[in-house]
Image 1 (spheres, helix red, strand yellow):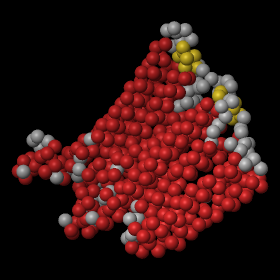
Image 2 (tube, helix red, strand yellow):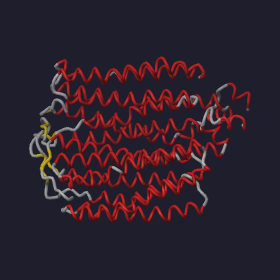
Image 3 (cartoon, helix red, strand yellow):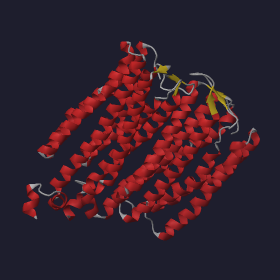
Image 4 (cartoon, chains in turn green, red):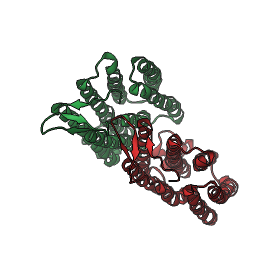
Length: 272
Length: 272
């Protein structure tokens, strides 16, 4: 958006094309996997799985749009030669539309899978969901700004709700982890680290143009970075949510554990 | 329809394009969510969920049509430049076809989720459904009228069934809320406010040309207004219906509540 790359080499074009297709396939099949795996967790955890599936499904939809937009935007000049930007342009705003829908849902699935008491859950969501929407909305003007000053200002404004989200997840949510088993607590801890590690990619890509990285190599790096971060933040994240739901289901119900697992937990064997 | 906008700036085009895509994705994934979440409510509330899913699915279909029509209607003149109206034109009649199907269904899902006695339900639906169809049918000649006089006449005629619907929802339906729990009654109250707030957008957009707002900015504002109102009136509305169905399911059956929720309601714990 901010910097229209008018020409890509054959190799650059192929790289972006393949990464978009990789992200699309990952999103689509993680979504299907999570939908058909609902029977593998107890009913109270299924809403978290469905929300995770919607996140990956919405992302798959947007990768179809991004992929098609890229395909129409860059057309080959000669066989095996460079690709030139067509008047259609490349529409990356889809990313922000996607994030506006999926980032609040990612936080919703994180809280949903913990099956917290209603008051705690409502208190966390009333902070996390508005903050995440605000973070995306404030980031967009910075993404499309051509100059450094507005980019930095919108970026800084967007960082405020981001830090608030981290505070809620790392301080307030921690208090709710006491009632979880040690194994679940540890996995939730890793889930939060995954969230920080992947969300951290976005501001770095966002700031590429500020560092003077705005040629076609930087364009390719930004597309690859966003796509890989999306796959980790949505597909891998959704699969960790699924793992937590499985562990909690086994903890909650020995009969379910005996049906689902050959040998665990120990309580299932003694109860059976 | 009434005023063909022959040219859009790059920014105007992008705004409409992204809003249509946002609405399409919201409709599609809300529809899927409601379909796969049927197990999260008792059987007696599933028909309301399925109808809500059909409403969002029908709207998703029409947004695909609107999106594609818009894409073919406006073509870029130069890279990053204006978009000119092609001979294909932009077909907005889809909106009225959509409303003719979805607005009666929205009222049907509203009544269905309350699980009212059969006589009460039939009495409400025999008023709401014909009135809503009449409202849409009378609005359409006003939408396509170029002159102010026929626009105002059809608009006024369309308002009569609209006021009748409000009367049924706010006076007659209220009598049926006595038998609902306070929490359900309060949520139904918010649902009705959501209905008024979102349906109110349509007559405002309808009257844009009367106020002399018929340039390309007004076109963009009308498309954004219709799309956001559609998402709130169908997706958010459907999700509130789901929430009501969840609350009523938990109230109706403590065993279901114990399976679905870790800790609520209190009645589930004592009964278990």
